[in-house]
Image 1: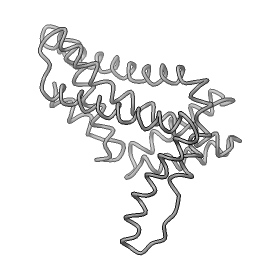
Image 2: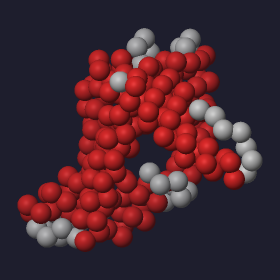
Image 3: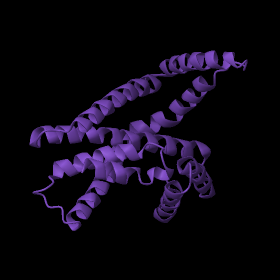
Length: 225
């Protein structure tokens, strides 16, 4: 976010992380808190929504890519487990589908309008069953989303990508330290196997089963290990 200083940035991320990890439906509450805090720092609504949307998309994309990398590493160093392969295939499918949607949304205003119109048609079909008025909510929202993010992605896409990957790498480095401290040697569990467990657990923790994925990561990681 242009103009964000270090201290307010740390204050914001630590606050919303604590909320998302402890409060029921913490992710939604954290987004609202993010808007309120950034507004108090003097940022416009357009800048805030652009930052929230793009960082969210990039973080989910990084989590989806982890099982793909893990399956490739296990294929080189040993025999990948079925769950890792299935998760990797699901990740590839979601990344591919998301890539197509984002390509249509960002390629031009015409393609974004067409994509939004098709989504509105599907939504309006459901609204008709409940005798609710039709509208073009998704189309207009998608056009606003495109106008807000296309400039950011073109000029800051790579730094955003590296930041998302660095976030995952830091988490994996911490897991390696914990595994070593717990007395699990490389002879019993290879780095590739630990990474595969980490990749599946990170993706599982993105599912809103518990507040902030609390306990979901632990259960998935222990099961994989």
